[in-house]
Length: 363
Ligand code: NAD
Ligand code: IPM
Ligand code: MN
Image 1 (cartoon, rainbow, N blue to C red):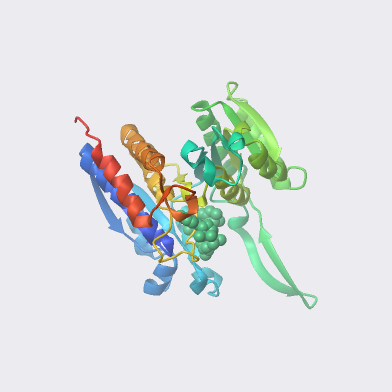
Image 2 (cartoon, rainbow, N blue to C red):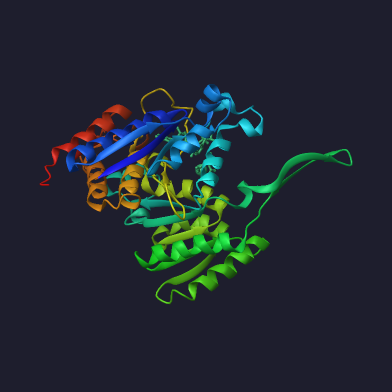
C-alpha cells in the first residue's frame, strides 16, 4: 500500500514525540511491505517564526493533498503574549476547521502494566476501556463574538457558545455508531440544568437514539461526570460531549491510564484526510530534555493505520509492541515506578521500533 502522510510536529515536545510516530510507521512499512511517504509542514509557534502566521496556506495544501495528517503539539510561553490571530493555538483550531474535523476520538485504556503509575487505586481503574467523542469544530472555541470591550467605563468580555443542530446530530450519530461496535452504551455529557445549548444537545441525543434501539443512552451532567470518571470509570463506554467539556474531561480521563503522555486521538471528518495527534500539549516544562513520553503519538499512528488506511493487523502490531515494551518494564519518567527501567524518549522509541521489527511476518 502507498500512502502520503503530512507530518506537522509543531512546538516543544511535539517535535520529540512525532519522531516516534514516524519511526514506528516506517518500521511498520518495512515489516508489512507498505510505502509511506512523509512530507513535513509547519504549524503553531514554529510556523509563526518561519512564516509569520500559525497556519501557512502551504500547510493546509499539504494536508489536503495527503491521505492522513500526523500532528505533534503547538504552543509555548514564547508565544503567549502574541495577538490572538498569531497564537499557535489558532493554527491548530484553524486546521481542524479547514479540514472539517468535527469528531475527536480520545480512547482511554487500562494497561495492567501501568496500574502503579496512576494515582488511582488498581481496583478502580482495572479494565477501563472508554472512548471520549469530543465535538471539535463548534461551541465556545469558534463562536463569535469573542472579544473585549468597554461598557459604561467597565471592561467587559464575551465568548459565544454557538451550535447548529446539525453539528450536534452528526457527532452524536458517530458516537452511537461507535458504541454499536463496542459495549453498546453512550453517555452524553452536558450541563442541561443551566445551558440552553446543553438542552438542545440532550434533545438531539434523544432523537438520534431512536434509530439505535440496541444502544443504551444515558445523560450525565458534566460536573457529575467529572466525579464519576474518577470514582467509577468502568461505567463508561462511549462518552459524547461538546468541545470544551470534552477537552477538560479527556485530560482528566488520561489519569486513569497513568499519564497524559499515553492518550492518543483521531480527528475525523466527512471525507478525510483525518488528523492524528496526542491529546497532550507542547509541555514546555520538559521540552528539549528527551524525557517526554512518545507513546501517545505512537498510539495515534496506530489509530491512523486502523481508521485512515484500514490496516487492522498493522495497527494491532503497534499496540502489541507498546504493550510488550511496557510489560518488559521500560518507562519514561512520567510513568516510571519503583523497580522499572527508566528510559529517555529516544530509547522508548527505539524499543517500540525494535519490537515491531523483531516479529517476523509472512507476507
Ligand atoms: P501540556 O499537555 O503541554 O502539559 C501538561 C503536563 O503534562 C506538563 O507537566 C507536561 O510536562 C506533562 N506532559 C504532557 N505531555 C507529556 C508527555 N508526552 N510525556 C510526559 N509528560 C507530559 O499542557 P500545558 O502545560 O497546560 O500547555 C502547554 C502548551 O501546550 C500551551 O501552550 C497549550 O496551549 C499547548 N497545548 C497544545 C495542545 C495541542 O497542540 N493539541 C494540547 C494541550 C495544550
Ligand atoms: C487539545 C488542546 C487544544 C484544545 C488547544 C491547544 C487549542 O488543549 O488539543 O486538547 O483545547 O482543543
Ligand atoms: Mn486539551
